[in-house]
Length: 139
Image (cartoon, rainbow, N blue to C red; front, top):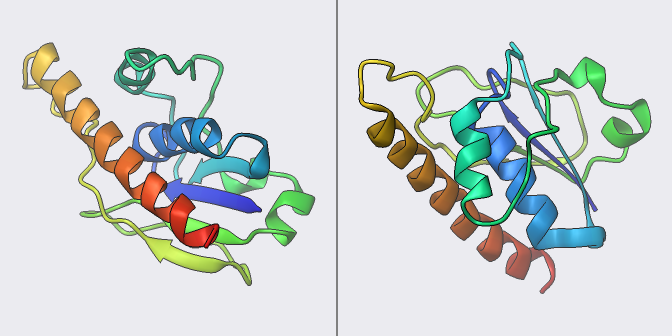
């Protein structure tokens, strides 16, 4: 099974989803993430996953142009995670799912601990969705 997670910057939500999904699905799925306007992986995304034992420090933001044609042609699911912005689109026969979650990135006016709390909340919400999704696709 091949799954692509997408949001705009590929810096927070889709990176969290990629890291969590790789852990949850293991070798049973090929997981990637991408964005329509890639930037850089948010350090708080890395930190919030490190708190639960997952290391995405080697991840980088990418667009679908950075993904192999083999991966894109064989996609089973494209899952978009944007809520308040326009979600990226990829042309694919894959089943499309939309999990709208507010972007935890930004909010520079907030204290660091409050921003990290936003990332933890997003991490936990994605993890819940992924665990339910795994049960659904393996049924």
